Image (cartoon, rainbow, N blue to C red; front, side, top):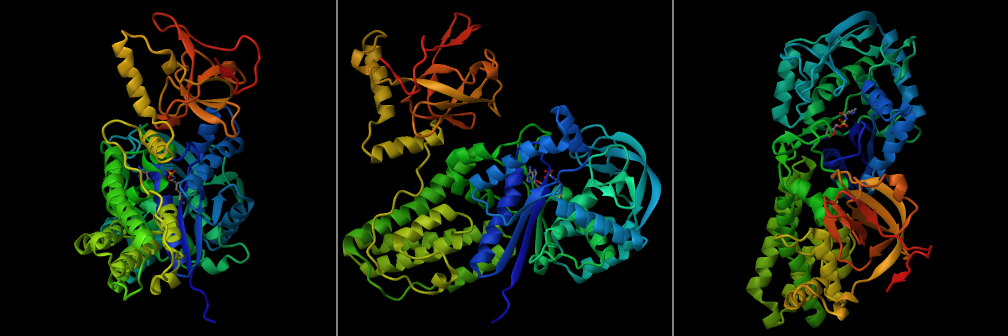
Length: 627
Ligand code: MSP
């Protein structure tokens, strides 16, 4: 049997000094999409992500939090893992640079490179940015301010070991020439080539001014420069048994901010260590907000939960890659995301699936010659495998348009033409399989409705005819006028289940209220369900200074998340463990990106300066009703 082809894909390892945001999610999703695609193609895929845990930046962040570095980082790492889980990202290993196996490999490589004569002792003086963990020359930072973080640079001087980067200039340039695919996209490559041609200075690779790092094996007073340590993660993850086959990596996905480290330092380190170089380093653009890079330092980072709250996971995954060119910057807009969700996902794909499955339920499908899909498949494959995600999605949606047009022109609801229904259903099979790396949950539902599997084999074989049942709604449309997404979804769900239509109830109450001069009918008030709830946890709202996010036990199977404006009035420890009264049957609302499923009752004085929560006078079990 032929050996299974391997595919090794990586993301940068992220600094765990803050919880993950859309920028981090973007790179990790790109890797997930590509990994899913190559798995679908039958390849043996290894997808690596993780965290970059050493260095001055992390040491300072831990100090600020009053913790030891490792203990501090241990509280952030689960946030990354949780975010990737929520986004349906399936990595094969989450590497941490504090993992023992990684530290051992870094020391091994340092010893090797040192023995080779590529490391020597000197001293370094320069302008340092802790945010980037890098020195800048006056040329790159003429005002002595970091070009990325816009903060003043620090003048640092320390004894340091240097890596002879300068002696790799020619070899690196030769490699670029021989392997034009090494730096992508091509327009970014030229800038790097020009800079390398100007000459390379040796790289300071050790620090003595702080301790949080991997000690140099040949001089333990020094810790390893964080980038020398971090870059090696890509290789060290393949040094374990069974993983050796994956080196060299096929593609390192990174953001454009760290291209220099990857396109210059990284090949030089590998060349010095006598290791083969990766095939491609692909640097994508930045997500900006109002044209400023999204990130912790700018204070404008959009957190993963918020991203998901707009229209769900699959729509977020779709939007990030549909809305712009992967190699270029893009300005993030909630409105664009919702528009694409409505216009492309709900109106084009969702409606098509709903229409065809409903007609097929009534009339059935008759097997016939499928529509030709080879061209679409070939084009989509070429675009995806060359990292043109937006183009691949356009190709697919052009095909979806053609399926919609076919249905529209053939009118099978009038003609009862079950052959054309079959052709469109078969086309939807192609769509779902190709789209599955981007939208795993939605495409799983399509596959379930039309009875096929999301596999390469099924891509090549015609759809088998089976009894079809109407598909559940794939994308709830978002009311662009005002309502938060989650609320819209729940209301729609309520309608389908014939449960009370809450908005209409509220409207009715308001009308009657006006009619009665501000008073509401007894019956109307009795609709409000008040209950005793136990506050199990209290967290500050990540996007609002006045709000807490409460975890509340209302005696139900699951706890609820309830957002409350109590931050100016209570310390978390004065709320945690308390029982209070809650409105239990409010339609959920999204408050600054977090869905709130209920409301805590509080009494407020005239000028709002005093807010006190209402509590039962005696202890009652959570879930007790208030009448
Ligand atoms: N720890 C280094 C990387 C070491 S890799 C051997 C680092 N970490 S980071 O936490 O700052 O993450 C950087 C990466 O996150 C960027 O390269 C990019 O992939 C992603 N992004 C962070 N902010 C971003 C945007 N605003 N937009 C798009 N991606 C960005 O640098």
